[in-house]
Image (cartoon, rainbow, N blue to C red):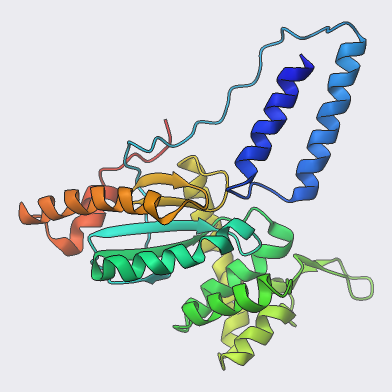
Length: 284
């Protein structure tokens, strides 16, 4: 019994090598709690060992096409590109940072045939939510790419993160920095560096809460549970994979798109009609 549990823990560790699932401290606590439960179970003679296990969360099938809306999300590349790669990520996830250069290489390799869309999937809410909202707010002023760069180069690499909850002032209740009049100091500093309208930036961060929540809900419905996760014209790929893994999937989807466009489908409408409208709305 204990070997089975330890194997399961090892499986979690292997998965964590390529993707961020949650705050490391929370994962360590879960493992410690699990070990304690296993020890108690063995001491009691294994009672309850045959209890049914809860069903595993459904995972996206890489062979299927899922409906991934991208309206309102920042992107790099032509809006009518034949292939759309959706990246779901978190600004405190090391694997998301690691895969950044791969995204740049793919854009150079495929040129106008590839569009990369950026969706926030926050798995470290205490330190990454402010960055998620800030990138959305910067996009409203046409500066997503510039702020994204600062969030990685100065925020992530410099370990400069805004905390989710700020201390209370006087007898007031604690509040999230983006809901306060002062705003979030780290990302506001980045906004100032880019000469953004900081008043609008703070207002937009509050409004962006809805878009980030919407994106996360849609991604969860499609089975996303870790970052980075990707959809290539609706087909799922997970983790900080080598460029060859992305290229293989992109090449397949590029051929399908080219054939469909040659058959009469408008290139500008291809993603909407072939992926968003015809793709699966939930993981099955």
